[in-house]
Length: 407
Image (cartoon, rainbow, N blue to C red; front, top):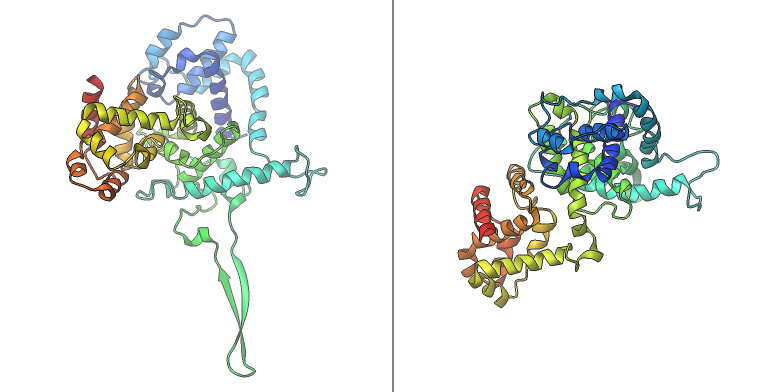
């Protein structure tokens, strides 16, 4: 198993210890954790299991600004815990093989109706993977980052002659066909043509050569693993827009050692963020207090409180928050601004202890900052304005949101 595979096992193990020791990953501290945050959690959990007393409050305090020379916690720490780590590694190493199923075997075949058939699981996984593949190939098309090669490709995958690349499982092939054309009496011409698959002509991102791996392929792998680890929720369109800024932040870090672990760190952060916003992606929970409809109604009340004139206009025009704010709230504004601006907004959003209250205030600030345009517009122009929010300095929006949050 390569370094990348071991890293994923570490991430899965970290998620286990999160549930056992939640005080390490409170909403106030989680997003300030450094690139080795997951390793800290693993080490912490293993030491506790070994019967050693750990002062978690001091560990959190030392980790707030990232793990530097104070702790110097790296993966090699685990080598000093052979009496624990060997057993843990043996039990956790099977998870990777359970997640990504390879069909086949003498007793299995593609037409098997057995619930435990590897082929059945393989085909069901491919239905999810097909949607993920389409979405990640269109991730942030305004920048070239996701179609460029990563510095640290997974050697086990990129040197497998395509056998282990996920996109190969759902890639549409190129079809060759011939047509017979008649030209006059008794004259015929045989034309050989090629019909290219839709994915090869649509302008979507294309895979790189053997030995290289594009950033969108890394994102595809993380989303597929998340869907496999969360079968009750699975993959929902829009998750690619959530994971994109997180991965981009880690992958362009100035520290090379941090960039090397971008995939593992991103998966860790994405999993924990989805634990907070997953209800936005579950339709049956839309009407609950954690659902998206409740959030949109709160936005309407916020606008009513801070600008009754705008609220009355929107009510008169029957321009409901559902018409424009569903995407704002579900995707945390990742589709309304450029990637650098999204990362700046998220920096403030995740640093706020009441981050979803602050998200409401950010959305309300966006509406109030275009109030003059709204007051002079009709229903059609106002819908277009809010659904295609105009370019704006995000510092103005964040400052306005901070003012609203203090009222």
